[in-house]
Image (cartoon, rainbow over all chains, first blue to last red; front, side, top):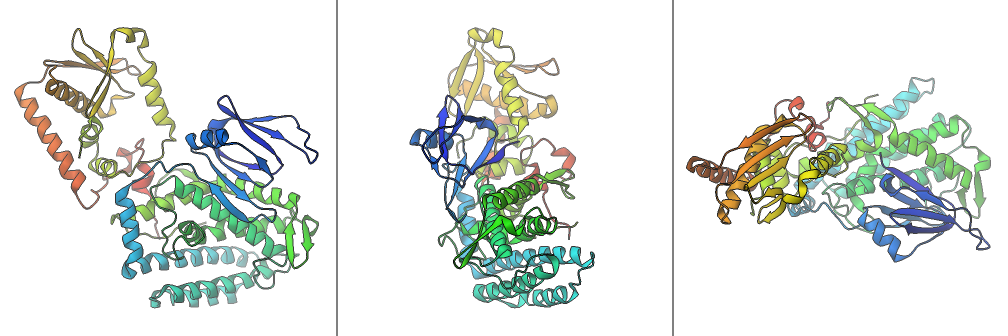
Length: 334
Length: 171
């Protein structure tokens, strides 16, 4: 099974024969003991530390279909090296574009993403509601908002509704999380620990979705809920809506409530809160474990990983766009 | 559409698989099954390989062809889709005929099952049948709608499109 590799430390990545060699380099330019990453096990690379690499390496990674995702000092996603598309299908591209261009075709998909996201948020709330956290009010509020989803016929109105649902949901975080206050959702920059974790987690979820879209015929820039291709691979944003509650929020709740991440794992800078390396590593570790966790899938009759669920979502979308089966968003059933 | 041997093979396995393949909807090649099939094809009977030729025609790449006895050798992992394998070799014979190599025979080998099937040269009925296959591939490939999947998932296990075809949400 191929894995995601995370490079936190500064160093040089190079091609060595037919595999990858990582040589850590410290601040004084002193080289450490090199490590070898077997190339056939690498699905993609996430680069958080500063990385030295040459074009021979990227040619090699391109041939092996390995993507590299880059993040800046504040863990913002800054871009990706994507290998050449290898699953091109003109028919698919045209179908996807047609669905985007026609409001009648686009709206049902956009509604599905909002609905799927809300259903998975409700799952989280119901879980904690059964565990002595009184969340009935928020649950009722979200259920009421969801009734309005079919009524909207414009994307911006739907996005507004989605924002309201998410706002109600985030208000419940202070009940769910024991020792931290989240208050209101702040981004750019996030102001406190919980907000920082949400931002970091959402970015990880977005990148995971992008990684899966790459292995299908879908074009990541043509999206239905979010506006296409504006600064981001926006189809990954659409898909991430559905998986954020499951992958990101559950990871945050468990890391904080089990005290695997503590307030000492954050650094407060002027007007922002930043994850220290320790928190980043804990989160990435828990997130990876979540992605490789498996569940018994009901329609496929076999166990699949959470990561594979994202790809299955791509398949359902493909079938919808090719006119085979209507898209029904994934909803956690456990 | 340029008809290739894979089309003829898929025609005899599943029309939906054929349609998806014709329309460029391929699945990621990460599966161990694909690797296993490739490995068996490349490493079985390699002691005999010097006298065989690889033959490339428009629409087919024949891995092993013996020019002396005019025999096509095809190696497959399992005989579960024997009909499709026979059809594929039939199509090779048809293409070779149109390239001036007449009266070819075929041998399909299943090293894991230690089984082989011998295929006689084409007769005039076979030519008509193969031309009908070609027409059927064109017709299916040009259909606007994706053909239905098979009726039971058990028939689809081991297909690279399994997850694609059978994923659905029960609400």
